[in-house]
Image 1 (tube, rainbow, N blue to C red):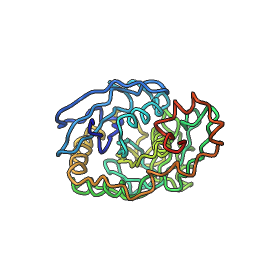
Image 2 (cartoon, helix red, strand yellow; image 1 turned 45 degrees about the vertical axis):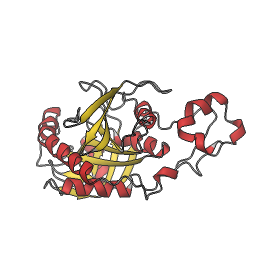
Image 3 (cartoon, one colour; image 1 turned 180 degrees about the vertical axis):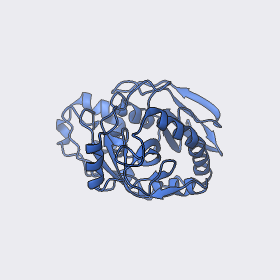
Image 4 (cartoon, rainbow, N blue to C red; image 1 turned 60 degrees about the horizontal axis):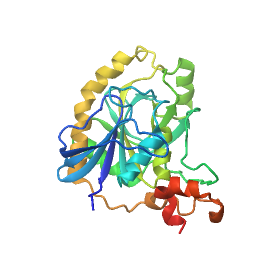
Length: 288
């Protein structure tokens, strides 16, 4: 039987490949929800098999709302992935989270409007429980891996996902700050929630690129500014992933792997055969 990847890395802005992988294979997969953003690359790092997926596609072709999040998560599920670390660029909504810092958030607020948020359609209704948006166990491992790089890293804080692709207005940014949000990004929702529906552990390594637009003594965020910080932080992300691979413990003591156990509300015999087939990889074990 083909060895499953113990961990998947979803690379965001600035991280489009994972150097250092050995015995590399590439998988150009299709899913019932379409094709993922790019072929998924697998390989070994410190003897651990990892998978890597470029969220925005090769050459950063897909804007945040164009990313096929469902296909991305489903394709990783096909490969047997159970745990995901997302690399994301974010803006800071608080003074002490400075550009160049990293954040491992523990809360998520979905402020998007135009994205597919669930796998469960076609007469199969699921109400997934997500009081804690990220896997605490995996997030702690990511935090420790970043600490080892010597970079400034913050543990905790709420992330808000906006629709994009434009940056925030000052009015929006100040409202988000008044709501108690810590960082702002464009891709973690619905990715985190789809991972939970797929019973995967999910954590974010967020790279602060700017102070959004609220900071009176800083210039408004630009793409050039974001890229400059991301270029500096790419090596930190790669070092942190290497550290994580070296120390990673794959045992899941969390509840992420049973997220669907009590979430399917539709009467089982009323779920159509075509829906059962499409979602079998997700819910087949609960329909027998």
